[in-house]
Length: 443
Image 1 (cartoon, rainbow, N blue to C red):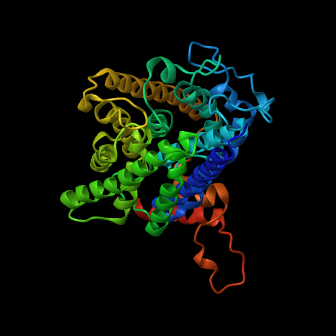
Image 2: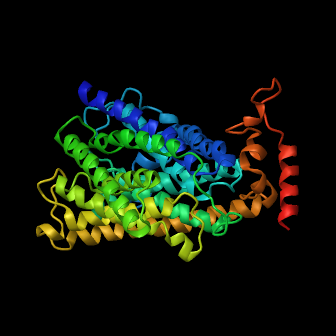
Image 3: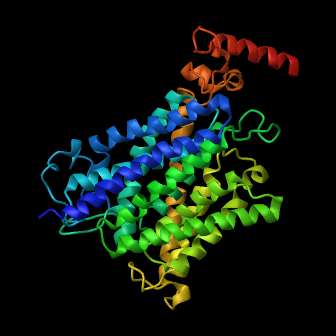
């Protein structure tokens, strides 16, 4: 029999997680320069549209079909087009209609792909991004989701991390954040640095937009984490509280680090700290106490605030700090389970600091490192093939002009039309000419 309360909670959680992708579009959109805001937001909306379709066609089957590859791959033909699932109940989620579970997992796939886009802001062709998104989801995300999220149940065989390694990843520290962060690093290296990186100021053009996006992400994240309990129960309640308090602590950790390092606590730091805390508590929210969640969040805020500066020391151009926040935060949150887990929490496992020894710790480390290495390597190959075939990066001239004008023939802020009755659409040719004139002056 369908559990209507649990079903209502999961459908609500799915809607909350779906809202996170438009929230991410606002968060990322505010962080780029004004000439790139629409393209940055379009990369999130493009991922939403494409991955939603692919998930229904074959993505769910690869991720949650019966295993056909030693814990590495679900049967890609078992649920093609979600065939046979409209009247079935999933034993894995007991009492939930299968389609509720399908919808909930779909929005995880969508936002994971969208997260990567922040690393290549200002310089990637939109068409190439869409090709990458489809290939990466198929080759990387769907199989890794099978590893992490697909549990054995009633004759169904799932993925190796969930069932053999027994690493704890409650809501996606490995499958979502380490996965996206490693992919972001690989793609940033394939595309290379933005023109002027390290020499020209590339400040966020709209900080209120960034803070609005962060707020929507935080709001949606309660569905992301607490919804992963797959029931309206005590586990969901504990996870909800841990998600709240870890994020609060992470903001404090990031702002304190900024104040000590730079002399200022910034709005961008508060928004970034919130996301860092959310990332870190995602894998550990079911296994730590509320006090443990504060520790996870506080350290995530401080560590990620320091990690975002690595791109200048190491020379890679991760435009919007996907590596510093999602890769580093995901690694810390995943490994923190091995230290801070307590058997009193819903996961029922003791970490090193609670007398559990290193048993859970090594499992967390192996799961995190394998996902990172596989995602980085596969993304490097996919990105390199696209770059050498159809071309992934914009030309330097188009990058100077601005990707919004060149690719989308639009502008996020068209002040030239104020007081005139003419067209509000900017002329890409005129913009290119102005860019060439500017280059001549600089030369």
